[in-house]
Image (cartoon, rainbow, N blue to C red):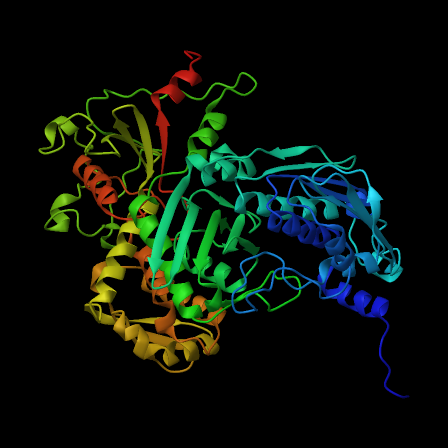
Length: 605
């Protein structure tokens, strides 16, 4: 068959396969055009999930009749005066309107401010296109009906109305965050009306989209590296979600869904968020247009940076610095959940426990049988020597008044307050100036050990202690092979091991920082992690994950009775340690309950 020139209608329908993937794609293109026209108010109406109707009205600059005629022709645009190396608008390819018009019934009505008349142009399945006078308000109205009627096969690939409506909502939310000075109204018979009023501060618009709760748990970031600037807001680690839908990224004001940016975001939170949970973040990157390529795909959702390493390093560094500065505070949702859990349910009365006094810490335990700690349960760094600090478990816990150095009342210099009790063998109750703090002792100390290990790793090989007798750990042969392959890297972490016949590993040295630990448990956990990473992953690339596993085995265990000075030392170290608000797995290490919250429980407010 001879080579033929395809007709323009068919060319546009082919292009529509990339530009117009679903109704949300249409909304994105039309809203981008409205923003490029300088609109300060944009109204979006949909019906049938956008399949029946999409209408976008703006108060922008409008188009003269000659531009209106060209706007529905392929590759006609006013936005590439400086070429592809200097793109400063959202749209620039000149494909959206002709592509949309080729698969739908398209109507555009536009009028410039100051003009006496407006004009309209119509396309149906790609045909038509002659402008004619029409009444219109200043600005532009674009109406798309019966999307994909000209290509019915595409309709079969669309999701239900609710799913398509949700995708449209997500597009509008992203645009609203990117342009807080613009008012957005999203309405229609298939949805409740959503309105985002124009605001001056970006965080106010983010709060409109994500809820006021985010503002209470947000950390502002503002960092510059060479020619790239990163601004925005990130959530404290304990304020997280079950999916990534609350992660927003923008490059020069353009909403993008770039894998590299999302990967850097995950890396920045890697040791602070539980597996399967996602941080909440709004990241805005400002960069010279010549250093980023936005012409990667017709949908313009992906970008390519000239120096991707620079951008990744900026994101990870800025977020980690912000988290170290403020990220150890607990999410406000913790107290809300506590209040909900403590409210009386159906007249149930909790069993009452009597405390001798609240003058000093007391231990409230599940059992009366004594528990004598092993060395593996002893946390590092509380006092010298460690054995002298930890009380004999058979002795009653001392009171604060009898312990030098912690007799003072709660003060502003101690945000986590003064310890008052240990309850259920794992939770420290501390009193602050205006409320209470409940600390998970194992989770908190796990983070402290982890940070100590990270600091030691930065100085080179971790110090180790030689075991009097090697510990032999039986493992499947494949796990033994993986550990043996990583033996050199593990030695840098103070863990010396070697093969000991078939199906066994001999451990001769352990990290000195961890004290006496459960060696078989640690080795089995490390074998599982290495198996999950794959044999091609260098252990040195996963040092923090290994340190996290070691910290879990080397921290004070749940059920360990603590003396008053141990409780106090733990709280003071938490205050001095960045990121102590979350354990290595991302769970909160403490929750706060203000006096206001307590009084609400007793109907005093």
